[in-house]
Length: 162
Image (cartoon, rainbow, N blue to C red; front, side):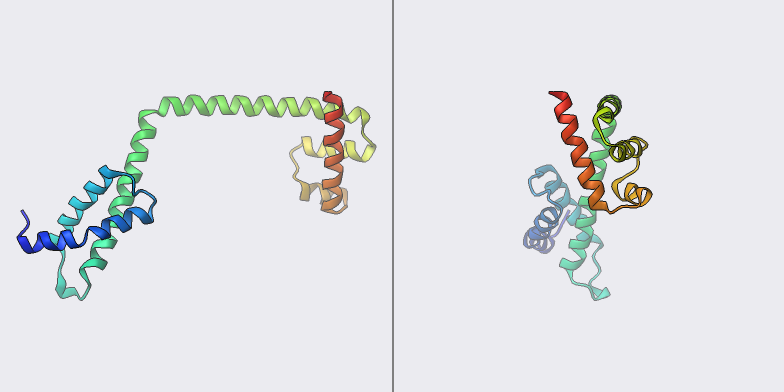
């Protein structure tokens, strides 16, 4: 139980909790706010003014870290509760990405028939997973040349889709 003086200190320090919540973008979480106020009461019982530190500095540091820990725990708890759904969604995303990669591969292979030799080389390197800068080094050309060539390939792919 807090003394009347300690209660006044807490009442005058509510802004510390609000500031710590706002700093972390959690000002709308009323449950977390109430928990942080209770934690600040606990901090007041541990506060030692003889250590030459101001109460508000001590309170802010402790409350800020408390809020951070509690928010992290809540996020972990939520991810654990819906862990199966997260795993299922991750599997779905991987399947979709694999489908998109295969679809892109098929489109690029069909585009190669109407491309120049140089564009076909770009497509082959792209299909092998090389990025633009790597392709420019391999092909011994500028990155702007790679960008222009890739745009040309995309235009040809759009024409084939129609």
